[in-house]
Length: 482
Ligand code: NAI
Ligand code: MG
Image (cartoon, rainbow, N blue to C red; front, side, top):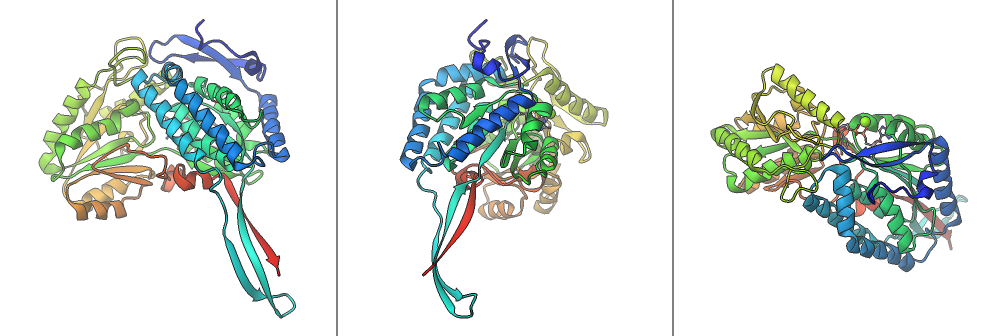
């Protein structure tokens, strides 16, 4: 067994059964992690609760808390290669992309480490009507306090990064946390617990539990001693979490699915637009919540863009996480591959045409060819559902009004990408697109300081930037009478 398969006995003792983990590039079993049962979830929540109530983390001086986060960042920097290999083996990302995931996670941690000590309320000197009818003077202030024990549930796409989008601001805010990674990709989350311990985070402040969503995840979201849940994953599970949170009225942050449009106008710089739109639906083999899989192209340049995207898709080197030079990896699991092919085949049966790709690859690993589809209709699953695979649908349009209606015709609202050289048009569409982020002449751009906040059924609340840490804070108003 490799280092990936070794199970820390302390971790193994947390659950009843185990969960097998497969390398999506080779279909080989690479490890087993605990399938945490209700008792294991209770124990993790109790540890987090105890640390929160005793204030072993939230009450520390800001400088000491920031120190821990910066030390963790240094450990991650030193261990980037090792973490990238683990991430690639769990998820299928090639080593360069996996390194990128670790590096951007590190950026997020540095960003939130910088917030520690800079979170404060406001003061306000007021004179107001007193209860006895005479004026009273107050010096009032608000203070921002950690929301409590938080449950963090993450998916298998970019797992170390998505974990950090929650863990870093939660810890920066002073919360205690229980993190549940996806059953497909648990290994780097387990490392995260180890890294923070080594950095000096008091025991029990960050607890990682592995397990299936329907059991371990559901137990965490329903737990009466968890104050808040932050979830990234499917809209379907988001809805279940809303119901589970009703018991103790948990606060929620939900980063859910997307069905984002890319719009290419005939004045766009196609040298930039074609690779930009290509990576917009192919990055991470399309397993990316902000993937732009509905590609609207103005009629005059439609054929040219379809040909360009087909060429781009064909030349992207595909390969497993350890294969040098590969850019496009497998899907995370056979289940995911079947889901993607199911959506694609439904569309083809209803008249959609495959311009390139369209099949599982004839090799080991859960690969699907980079696929460009034309001739779709708006009612197809290809156009309505999040595909989460390397499939882009190219759709012709006539004018601005037509494409704006089509782009917004979705229950989702996570992202949109726009390609035009006209400044006024860019501003107009940035205003009118119903999406949490709009990219003009770029796609899948991200920065720790820029919030992502799903509109419509893409979610509640937001992550990154101030919004990301505010999500773990609650406000108290204090009145002091003179
Ligand atoms: P999922 O939403 O079921 O899984 C995400 C996380 O939620 C995992 O950690 C899972 O264990 C947990 N989970 C599942 N059921 C739960 C429950 N009842 N209570 C609490 N936690 C629960 O996503 P899945 O099944 O892996 O993928 C299915 C589809 O969902 C994908 O094809 C894709 O369309 C979408 N998806 C979207 C993501 C995004 O970032 N927008 C991420 C992952 C999946
Ligand atoms: Mg699921």
